[in-house]
Length: 317
Image (cartoon, rainbow, N blue to C red; front, side, top):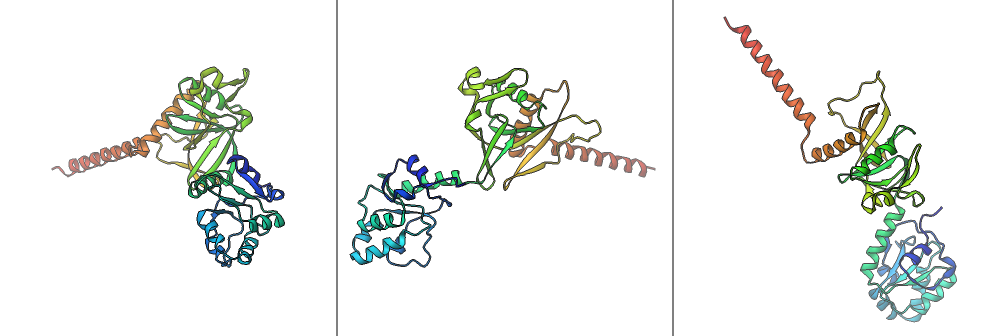
C-alpha cells in the first residue's frame, strides 16, 4: 500500500482543492518536487511526471503570456496519467486550461497561501519522513544521558524492568515492546512508539503502566535517534564475554550500522547502572577518550619496559 497519497498532503497542509477531486487518492512515490519552468516553454523531453508539480509566481506569470492554444497544450502535458498532483502557491489564480485538463485526467490541482520556496521546503521534509525506509523491532528504546539506547533480547529477559529502573533514575522512555524505526537519511535511525502503545510500559506481574501519568511528562519523549544497542542475554558460563571493550560489534538496521554491546544477565547485576555507564562511555569515546585503548597502551608500555630491564640484567657482567 502507498505510504502517502495526495489526500494526506491536502489534510496535512490544509490545501484548497481546486479541481481533479477524483485523483486525490493517487500515490506519491518520491519526495522530490518539480517546478516545471522549462516545461512551460514546451520542453517536456525530461518531464519528471511522477513528482508533485509546484507552480509559483514565475510559472503562472509566464503561462499567462502564452497564447490560449499554447497554454492549453502545456497544461494538457502537465497533467499526465502518473502525475500525483499540481500545487499553486501564493493563492495565485489558477488558469482555466489547467482546471479543464486536470478534470479530464483526474489530476488534483491544489492551492496554498504559502510562498513557493517555503511550501517546497516543508513538503519535501514531510515527504522525506513519510517515504523513508522503515521497520519495526522488538525491544525498548530509552533516552539515557542524550544517547538513544535500544534494549533488545529475548522475551522475559528483563528489558522492560530495566527501562523502568532507568525511568526512575531520571531517564526517558521512548517506546516499549515494539519500536518503529525510520531511516530519515543515511546513517540516521529515528525510533518512536506505535500510537497505540505510546507512553505505556508492560511489567510482568504488574501489568501495563502509563509512564507519563506515573512519572510526569519529563519521563517520556516521542522519538529519539538510535545511537547504540544493548542486547540482554541470559548468562552462559561457557561463553566468553568481552572484558576490555576493545572490539566493537556492529549491527545493521536498514542501511545503517549501529554499535552493539552484549550484556549478560544474572541475579545481582544492576542492568540499569550498566546501561547508564555504557551510554556515558559511548559519549566519552566520541570525544576521543577510550579507556580500554588507554589501558592497553599502558600495559604494552609496562611489558616493554619490563622486557628491556630483563635484557639489561642479562647483559650485566
